[in-house]
Length: 109
Length: 211
Image 1 (cartoon, each protein chain N blue to C red):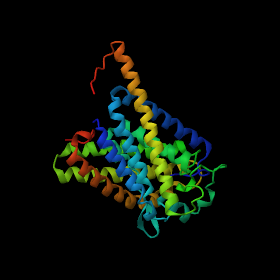
Image 2: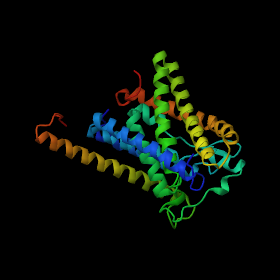
Image 3: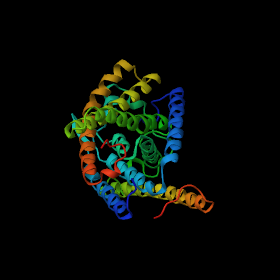
Image 4: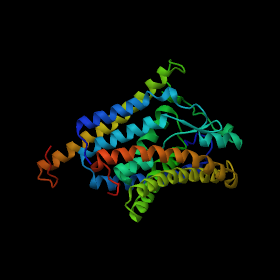
């Protein structure tokens, strides 16, 4: 199930394109929020003591603008891509090291 | 369906976190045995897509919205254990960076959305696809599996809220399931469209797809 580099970039472009739809997303409460409102336990929900950097999927300073939402979403995509990128590098480095010692996983790119 | 801080008591936070840690440990071991580094980009783009798709709330009915969870979608593409990892990444990033879902509720949110949805969705879809290989049947199985995975997640959230003494189960369960039938139908539609397309163009990428 390996994916060629070019296809990876195409798939990422699709994810980025989806982020640009966020200004069109519904602002209504979701299923859990709806039940919490209807059944009267929504006011028990607490805000965390400290604000997350992009709380509410909004880039700070770009209040409630479509641009702020898109910027926050893009950062999220970027962070996830970076995490998996690091994981890939580490796994590859481990494998190559294993190969050097005559490890079992021989693979050519 | 991200549970915020303040709705779960400490025993529920600890209990759900313990189950989640166990599930994550097992998932990492399982994927560690079979995963090659060349496959990690596929995990990354799946996680990135699921994160993006979760931003897009669609209206369901009566001023309520829902969004794709993506557990079944991820599990059918990546296999159930790799999907637990990608879904967990998404849920953790949402809590830490975007304050979507409480930090104290992170264990529960991971259990509901990153563990339950991929496992239920994957195995239901596989069971359905084993019955018949017809295309319409497989599509229906995928739709039902996606929908039920969302409902199972909603049921789990209801149980956690009830165990915490926030709201009695008999009050919360039916409305939660009711709303998530509708949201789950949305999940089913999105999942079947995306996987239908992916199976057509790149069936080799789809691990859990019964060919």
